[in-house]
Image (tube, rainbow, N blue to C red; front, side, top):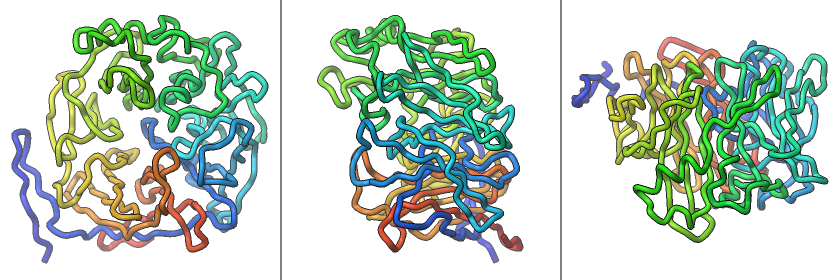
Length: 414
């Protein structure tokens, strides 16, 4: 008989299964002498699979023991899961890194055939986003700007627009999230008024500045009086699931001198309600329903209400999620949650069904001895039907490959 433990909090009474019952089976998807990866979890509902769950996006690269050189391209690949995981090589990009990949995202308004990725002009260093169609086997559009070049920093999950970031600034101030060789067109200003987070209209290509570094510096000054001496950058730009609000971190002095800054912020898509949050939600947060975020505080996997600016709930227990700051992802339906965490030289994954507290834990996947900017993070990404998760690992040939975790509850089979 299954036993249960009851977690009583200030917000609710919730029962979690006392022992794991969800079955997690790991299957290797890519093979060979070259390395393969998908990359980042840092867009709301980052789904590697296309709309009919047939094709998975990925990159094929030569080296994982260093950051890419400025002229080093990664091959954009498509994996056909209905044809024994056959790989099709579609294009190349020179805007990628081992952590984020190239910010892949299937176009929500045409997710069966169209996807976004970032690229960079080698001659000028200018970064731009690309919209690609797999039926036409060609780039439909390149979102270039000669004056203030930006790449995709997060596609709205309802479609129609994406967030734009200056990846040259990130390459200078937080190398792990930037692209080597990218032009930093705002490098002469610690808090420029013409750089920050942009919103790009997918159909027209027009863009507007949502929030500038100068706006953020003015608000940070109360907490950090010497902010003007610190070059600011932005990480983890996350649309909410409704596509009407953005959560992000403004940071400073991570790879440079100055005042260490790590402040969570939110802003509505129309530019209203810019808020610097006093409560720090750690890890790589993900949006849940309404305007609630899932993240970490202390040893708890918590729900944080962005509007109320307070913690309003908890997922699981520290026994289920031993590292709530691990990489996390909520499934498209919102019913399943996965936390990927590191233990020793392996990544593990704990999966929870929110409706009834059933959960499971995967076997470990090797992540090698890679660390720092070239580390292999857990970065779990759900498919569209809540029954598979794409992850990364080192295979028996010591190459970085893509794996799928199949999720099954008692009585189900994959």
